[in-house]
Length: 173
Ligand code: HEC
Ligand code: HEC
Image 1 (cartoon, rainbow, N blue to C red):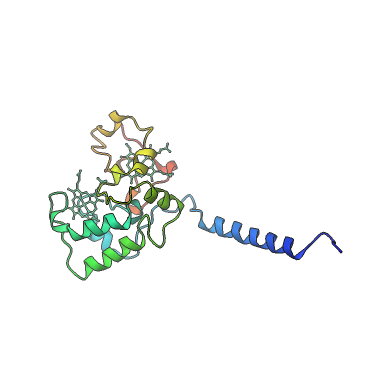
Image 2 (image 1 turned 180 degrees about the horizontal axis):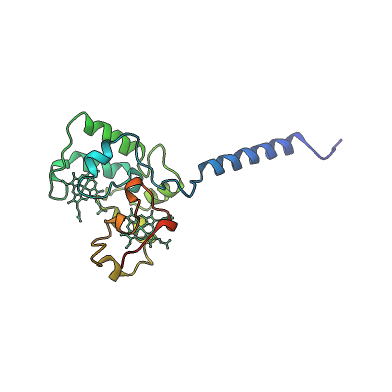
């Protein structure tokens, strides 16, 4: 009865091809942003004036929720955003957060590294950040051209586009 191909075999084969396709289409290309920014200019305009435009996927949603509820005292500064722009911003941050609806494997790993009962406000304090940078010597962070670990753009020149690919890293002297 068996002539090489069985229905079960065929079904498994089709499923594998489908899954491989899914995997390939989910893998970021070299020129893609590892941590994409929301469409539109709100995040860039409201949150890019004082520092790097930190991508939503760099913190879990609860961190963004806490931060957007306290913008009038944002690390000692007033970073208030008028409604309804604040609500739109919050929705983008929640959707694209490390544990949001559009999170990929890298973001989920980041989210999993954050203890559930905490809502860190510093990306640089997450275990993921520390793990990714454990080969960067302490003395580097204090170089004048860098200033602080949160100054992502010093070493990731296109951080303001969410681009953190290893191949684009440039450490200033
Ligand atoms: C008026 C200036 C200002 C604006 C506007 C502003 N920030 Fe900040 N932000 C700061 C300062 C100051 C810090 C603290 C830097 C430090 O502690 O070294 C900070 C730190 C942060 C950090 C922590 C980075 C880290 O890992 O240490 C995040 C995340 C952040 N801001 C997100 C936002 C978001 C989201 C918005 C827009 C809603 C925003 N910021 C708008 C001034 C601003
Ligand atoms: C002193 C320079 C420096 C600064 C500042 C810095 N990084 Fe990095 N980052 C690196 C280096 C070097 C690597 C590559 C580590 C490796 O692959 O061994 C890296 C890797 C990464 C990766 C992993 C990329 C990948 O291919 O998976 C991410 C994500 C990242 N950094 C995010 C950030 C964020 C977010 C900030 C700011 C909050 C930041 N970095 C600040 C030097 C820096």
